[in-house]
Image (cartoon, rainbow, N blue to C red):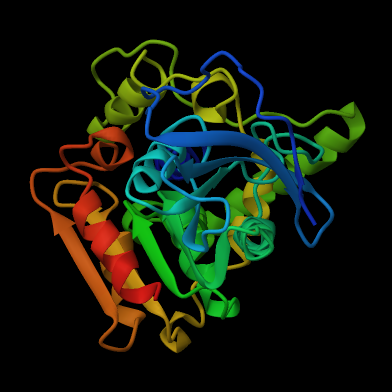
Length: 342
């Protein structure tokens, strides 16, 4: 039984000053259709740990050179890249008049950092603040009107970021995961203290082997083919990451493996500890039928103030909110940012 819980817990983890580069005419590398209403440029910026992050900056074509607009930094899902869901959100919101920045977190995608394919609650939270650093110094951004948006595991990191970063005036968490909770406790908190200790023993044993071998073992990810016996949420992930719908070669969930031992920091450093102290506006969005719905509902219970809202989308699963524009409530997201980025 423990092995089954451990596999499910690890699967939950593992599948789910800047410079501007020339805006060259490149082959479209996103999994969604290109809009003719926005301009896109590749940008880089460093976080507080000195890691260079790569992003796509989306601006409305209606923007004038002296305009000062509201801006939104966007990342996620966990294990995805900016050419997937975060880019779709960024492009759509730029069409609606915002400057948006979809970025790859540290150690993933086109962002720097070695070794590759690792995660950290501290560094990934910092990545959001680094994006705010960049936007705050963009000549077309009103630095008093900056929000963030996190998808899946980065929904949790987004709420964690706004706990510490008072420059963030409005936060959206879409189809949120608390990666530290699921890593330490498994789905629905099914891993107890003894099982967690055994998991830590196995992971630390792997650390010893990694050091000896000079390599980092990858964790199990999505199967290359479905048998039909997988849990529904695994099938949903597969249908996004492993098919034409959302596959991208730089995405860990599509074409790689997380570093297995990076889960240790997620187990040991729970996020959302001070979320009850958040004073700025937060909108939490989740699907009615999502296996992960309880993460958003429990996170929302800790939030205080009349500028916090939980929105449950009927008939929607976890990955529907990655790219199903009939389900993603963009009108609501836009109105939320219009209200609080002013």
